[in-house]
Amino acid sequence: MCSRRRHRLHTFSSPKSIWKAIFLLALASLALTACGGVAVNNWPGLSHAGNAVYYAQLQLIKIDATNGTQIWRYPEKPDAKNSFIAAPAVNGQWVIAGNMNNEVIAIDDESGAEVWAFRDEQGKGRFIASPLVVNDTVLIPSTDRYLYSLDAKTGQLLWRFKARDALWAGVASDGKMVYLPGTDHYLYAIDLASGKLAWEMDLGGSMLHAPVLAPDGMLYLSTIVQEMIAVDTAQQKVAWRETIEGKVWNPPLLDDGRLIFGTDKNKVYALDAQSGATLWTVNTNGSIIASPVKLGDGYLFGAENGEVFTLSREGVPGWTRTLKGKIYSSLSLSENLAAVGGMELEHLLVTFDAQGKQDWTYNPPGN
Image 1: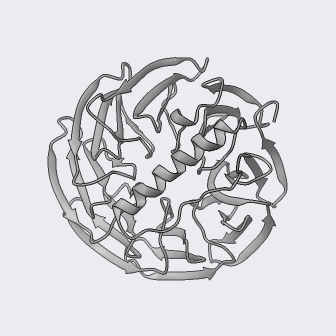
Image 2: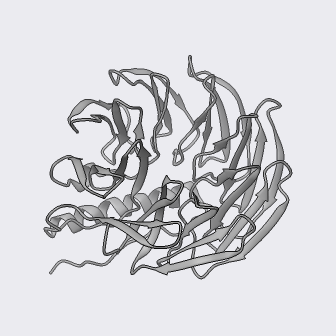
């Protein structure tokens, strides 16, 4: 008899334990698919462009953001061996994502047909971070320690940069430099054109999420030693670092001079982006894994205990709705509509308006 026991990522103290968890998730996917069903057992990656939502898990799925109707899915049948972990990049022509089988794939945004696929035959890792498209360049880190730069039109390798250990998090770029956070504790600044290292900085802990780059060149990211850090990229130095309670698993939200984020220790923070000073904190009933998103006049959060709730800009609680399952991903669709996804949910995606009313939901046709 096949077991339907679910798996989740826990918090870790080393790059090896982080990668071990991802490997176990992959094995769980294979086992559950062998049982004959489509099991949702890893975090969904969500992206939004125009009037479409892009959902990445066992498949890449394009969904109409106005009503939840499926437009296409790739591949047609789920394949756990080639499953997707992170949110895809969308550039208007292609939808680009990396999978667990060491491939980067570009899909035609209109038809859902494969345009190109890249595989580094020398690499032995998996692509578990979201790609970033800068002009005609795709930047995507791999667990094989390399950051890959690909031609967005053809998938041809332009260059690759080797870090000291596995790469978990996505990158940020200002169009000239690429900022790469590593599980090896280092933040790397790499020349976008050549792939050469410009400078590096030991931040004292593994980094799990893509950094947030502000227009003034300030870079915001956290480490698993429970610090939120601001790096002045022009001066190549830490501007401030603030101790927080818990780990941050997804990028913080930078909104009007404030950094808003939740932690896996049931805490929401608002920090002053310039100084790092704590503006307010809110205790929650569950771990916060997903990034917060703007909704109405405040922020929407999803918690691991299934609660979806809002806070005002001043941290005042708004409405709360409870879903059966665990929330690990969130996405802003408009000023007044947001989506959440996760594990063990009745629907793969659930949307709420700014007043807390549930709008459309999504499940694959036939489920």
